Length: 246
Image (cartoon, rainbow, N blue to C red; front, side):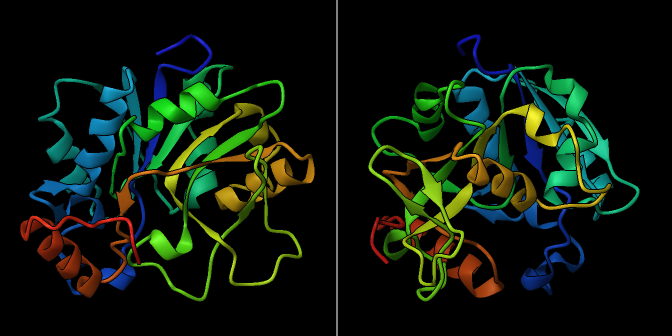
């Protein structure tokens, strides 16, 4: 881990997982198993491999289960941030912002596993980070190669230099966000309220031409519904893997 990135990261694990019901009625989505390991552990494993020493994990729904599960981790320091109300992705980060110091930091979703290409994607993101021109750097994948995503929708377009945008861009947009970012804490300095989405800070970065992306060169599967979960696990169990095609 180079000094330009904070040794503390954020893992967002507070969501309700409503689209995964009934599976999430008695177990939160981040603790659902994909390939024999929880999606939350997949995220933490990647942070450990990237040299991150501490992870702040926010919780809300069935929080006590996540608390109990993470007591078994010994390879990374875990700081729990239990929310008394659901703060959304941006609000969850803003709620613990002082823990990251003044350096940009990784923030990962706890429910969107991916398989790395030849070089781990977090390593590629760290190498690509340029504070002189970036306020946020998102991990993206081409829509047609990302399994489990809508074929008719996407999140961003990306220039050859890595700058991304979506304002006034009609659907389908060519890239989807797959749950990992490096973000400048200064973006959260003036939040619009207690509860807000990361989309708020990404839009600010885009308006300043300081929103960038890195294209994922491995595979990913959006586990959004019980059927997605079944297909993802069946593909991994078959030895076929998720592949890189739609």
